Amino acid sequence: MRALVLACGLSAQTAAADVLVPLRTIRAREVIAPGDITVKLADVPGTLTHPDQAVGQEARVALYPGRPLRSGDIGPPALIDRNQIVSLIFAQGGLRITTEGRSLDRASAGETIRVMNLSSRSTVTGFVRADGIIEVR
Image (cartoon, rainbow, N blue to C red):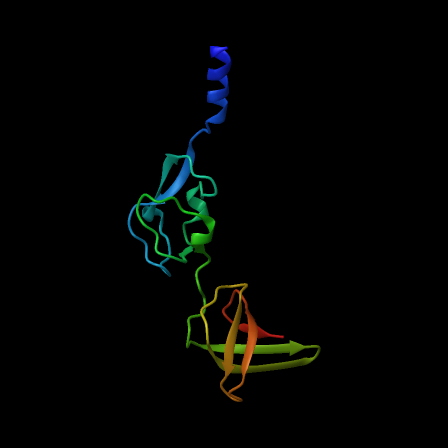
């Protein structure tokens, strides 16, 4: 009976795995460099495990030394900052309109963003392309 209890106790334990942790405090909106993180042995589910997942990404929140990195803590770096002058493009069929706008939010490639059209002063929503141009639909 004692052997059965020990066997059950061992199967309930989980094995530690590699997790990413910052080596220093990383402020929100700061891009993570290879020297900013390290791998640590811990048992924390839902955390990042390989440096390639974090290097080059932007911190969405403040990251503190020794605390495991979660996928929601980081994201792609913003291409557009708030109040930045950006190019707006509307293209449909043979029609193509290009103008300038002022961004009302921060966004990275693939995200939607609100932009004030500088010509009409109206607010439009667009999609941030990889080249930093806002595509309005």
